[in-house]
Image (tube, rainbow, N blue to C red; front, side, top):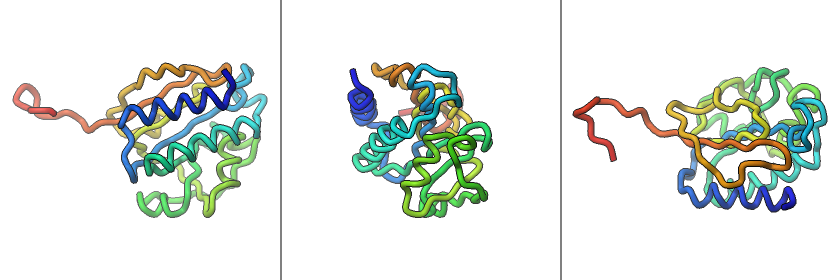
Length: 177
């Protein structure tokens, strides 16, 4: 299967879950190096970033979620998002522009494609996808619930996904739907 086909499958599986709601925040972590079977941060690819960005735009258009692209560890995993999204959630911006060697190819490409990109240091997303073990968990709301997608790889990179749910409180007397 080509990368395009794998991404199409990934988006299709997300759409079939019904976990994504309009206005929610969706985080994407992607090591384009890992997609090619290289060690994270060693072989960034704008070609892969282009494909992933396009697939995530499709997901966004079909669900109404807001996208946040995670940078690499050299920018402390800051996130690229549209200024309107930042304002909607009340996040504080940080001042840096991602580049391939400090931010990573995916975040750099996303920054270049957005209308009014900003970076924020921390978010609490409702759901997300991690391509290449980029550790998006720090940017998910508690309680994160793994999704067992059939599309477990993009190229050579492992794909993990999660959505979040409200905390269950009340113990034995609590009633949950």
